[in-house]
Amino acid sequence: MVYVVSDIHGCYEEYRDLLELIHLRDQDTLYVLGDVVDRGEDAIKVLLDMMSRPNVIPITGNHDYLASVVLEKLCVDITEENADSYLDAEFMKVYNMRIADGGHATLTAFRQLTRGQRLKVLDYLFEFLPYAQVEVNGRQFVLVHAGLMNFSQERDLKDYALYERIFERADYSKVYFKDRFLVTGHTPTSYINRSGSSRIYKANNHFAIDCGVVYGGRLAALCLDTLEEYYVKKALVL
Image 1: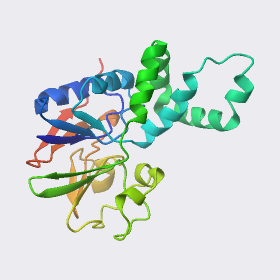
Image 2: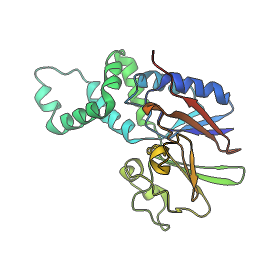
Image 3: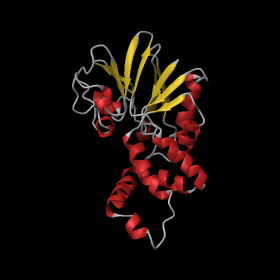
């Protein structure tokens, strides 16, 4: 079976519960459509678990990309001698933006790893795919984190720049591909259907699967073989 999930955002317990719910086996494949990190408390735990599973295939989200930029800098010992030149204004801009956008817990947990663990996590982030194309049971799927900025039928998927795939929200009123389904995260589905429902959104050859778990919604998975939907509610913190 082939499954997709997106926007885990450090919600480790829900992620593990979802793996149990779908009974993920070694012969199955799970695509994670980005934004593994930030906002939730346990992004590093999610990454370490994903790293241990060769059948989990990650695709880059905007939070994952920005995390890799900052965490790479934090793998170097910063001293009084190199601080001014190494931590330049551009880096501090990105760093402060990440803190403001829910990156504090990810950065804190990353600093608590050994240097060897940090390097392995960083290498893993750099291995995230920009997108994937999958055919299952005669149906073709394009898997990407956010959407396809400046979309054109004439453009090949490989011709889209990374920022065009990880920042631009899809237009769910528009059919991008007549012969393929576009599967995305990034935009919580409650924003798309305006109903507040945290369920997978299906229309116009789209599957939008970010059901806002980190905001109190649910973590969703879609089985591409059967189009069956799976949901785990956000755990209550007592």
